[in-house]
Length: 270
Image (cartoon, rainbow, N blue to C red; front, top):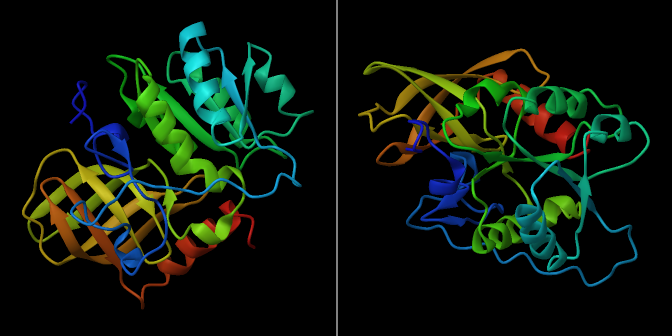
């Protein structure tokens, strides 16, 4: 649990024991991700060729120290980090970005709305820096991909850059699961529970609950994908470690195709 009483990616799932973990495909893709016991640090290889344009990540209104830390981290993966001020929403209409990093503060919602409504930049990866005493659930509808606890340290920044490098470089063959933080409601014979997703695939998702719960194998998960109507899908628990669990979607549930369609759209494969 984060210090605000909510789970953070830094401490679970996309992050495990302080490290952003492997986000690639595996034999466990339908369970959302590999279990923590099987998780290893991502080691996304550096691209061999720079024939394509260098990906650009906007660092939106960040302080000098954070900007320097993230710029160095992304540079190691040959990603260009660009410090940008208040004019970022206006620049979305004229420039192309593959990602942006911003502080999830009072003005974040307006920036996130501008990103997700942008014609050419709505699919960019969003990295949200979580300040003290902020409830990130109010930003769930924007589909933030990675949460970073403030202050951003050098090790965390390097892990973030390495683990999302392939998505920024559009090396989509490396990814079956997508890092995504959205609210998830679970209804099971044991009761109703709420939590936040950490990764999602066409076959399942990983979910961090607010507290450990004795869930049965069969349950129903409800959530809203960015720019999509609410989804309710039958699923089963395929692994659980404390409050962190992996769900496998029921193959016969039509909602599974909705999830697959959103993923294909997000990756530009539709």
